[in-house]
Structure formats: C-alpha cells, structure tokens
Length: 181
Image (tube, rainbow, N blue to C red; front, side):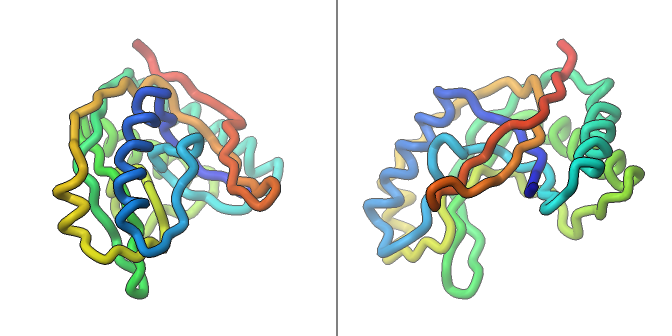
C-alpha cells in the first residue's frame, strides 16, 4: 500500500479551494486537477509499505503527537512550483506555522527512529490544486481569484492510503491520531 501523513480539511475549506480551482481551470491550457475530496495538507510522503511498516508508522505517529495541542491554520495565497515547464499549482498555508513546523519535525524524528527516511527538503506547507498545469497567463489568474482568509482547526493527523479506483486517484484515511485540546 502507498501511504502518506496528512492534515485533513473540513468541507468549508474544500469548497473554498474548489472555487479557486475553478478559476485556475478556466485559465489553464491543460492540467491534472486534484479532486476536491482529495484536498489535504501533506506532512510526510512515505510511499509503498507493508503491514508491519504500517504498524511502525502508527506507533511513531502516536508518539510524535502525544504532547501536541490543537492549533489553527488558515488559507493563504496561491502559488506554484515549476517542473519541466509545467506547474504544480497550490494554495499556501499561514497561521500557527511554527506549531505546524514543530509537529512536522516531531513526526520526522519519530518515524526516523522507527526506520523511515527523513525528508531531504524542508516543509513548505501547501494544498495541491493541480499538477502538470500549463497556464497562458499566471498574472491574470492572480487578478481573477478573490481570496479570503479561511481558518481551520488542526485536531488530528491522518495516515492516508493512496489508491487508484476506476482510473481515479483516491485518498482514504486508514488511521487517525487526535491532538489534545
């Protein structure tokens, strides 16, 4: 199974991101756009694992979040990464980023102690809107998008399984660890 660790998003946030995604789709020549059901904030991509490794990930995640309190994040501005002349379009995150970064490091350290590799790059918190997007005018999109700051509470961390069903990418929560109040 292919897994990653993420922060889930509530329906209101997903609907807001979907509206931003619509503007980008209209202005895109082409692209592979994320299903709104799959919007999330990735903390760590792990990849292919077996059942024994899943148990190690669960134990590591439990240890990493044991002293972590709930915190608040909010949506930021859209941006992009460029790979081979194609863009990965994302929505930035702001708010209590220092707490998010500390949580990320706790997860990295805990999973490393359980035999998993550390990320080579630092955390750049974002929600992916689309991959391999080709845009004619990125500046026009920035003018067309009406941004609001939408806040959400981070109250759990989720191990997600990535599968393909009928040709579509589906992210399924397979384990959740709650954060304390």
